[in-house]
Length: 124
Image 1 (cartoon, rainbow, N blue to C red):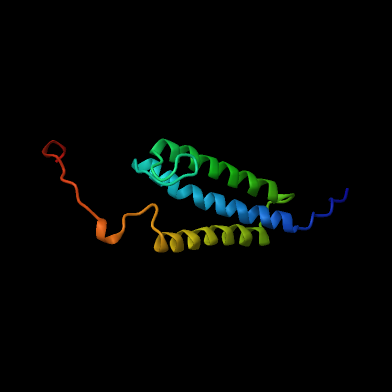
Image 2 (image 1 turned 135 degrees about the vertical axis):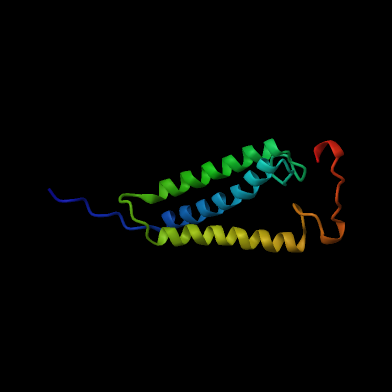
């Protein structure tokens, strides 16, 4: 019995892998904010999004990204240029975040505004 011919990768699969990389990369800062109890900008609740909102938004990005990557896989278990597309999506997101935070900080404290808080004696 002969095997079916492999389905050639299409632009749609590459695009799905690229967008999947964007979404998976976007989930990381939201999950980190949730884990550390910090606020972080989300489209759900704006600049002061709570850790719980970040948990939900990060999980939604991760699930969406993984669903896109899964849909783009097709037959076989080997990666091809779709892995490159996924990685380009993640790198694109990282570059965009670095540039946007450098030009208009939304999620970080500007260098001159850093403050330290006293640790209560009971917590020492």
